[in-house]
Image (cartoon, rainbow, N blue to C red; front, top):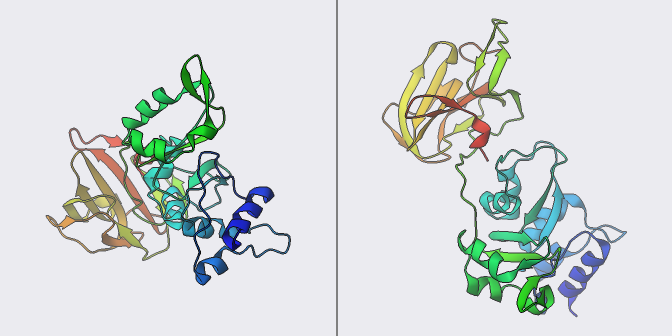
Length: 305
């Protein structure tokens, strides 16, 4: 067994990585010297530091699934970028209707595009495959990507998935309405709903999220669209509205506006900078999502990832 093989074997024994039974591991191919050095366990006791986990996972060619505890100031897109996979893949695997992650939340992370099915037991292979074909998976790839002789039992003429196994589903994904994060915020100081206004001290409906970030931090378009308004608007201060196919996103209290009315912008394009203009107590971005059909404000957390 070469160095890569011994490393993976040691990681399994130490409990740092959980290698899904469904994956057929090919660790005999020679790795480059750079990759071998990157994969060495650096702790004296033989345990891989948690801070290096995502870096190591990203470099592995085999699919790996690991239980992960979310840390403070981590969000779905950040974790996905560090793993080198689409955020939608991790969101789909964990079926996160609400893409917001909370500190100490346990999720499954993966290093490849696709989904993972965790078998509850007494599930027929045929039924599971059909359910994921509706989400973009293909029968051929599912069968080819999993060692069926290790994960199935034959019961009453049907192939049944063993309880607790992880079935790898290449290319599959769920469909969610989502928007990219408009700013890398430190915290959400005020959420959607009734609140006491920090300046007027009156209770009123808060139409969006207040995302605290450093003064001058870039503000990004959450999705491709057309600038429907860019300018000053009362308590919003400097504000930009972007009209998308079914919704409009609003970005308020900007210190600087970098777009103009009628301009078409792309997803994650910089449209302004965080400020404290209008009715504001400090640097933050006021972010709203409104329905185009009637202008009704919607909960941003249902769309952000």
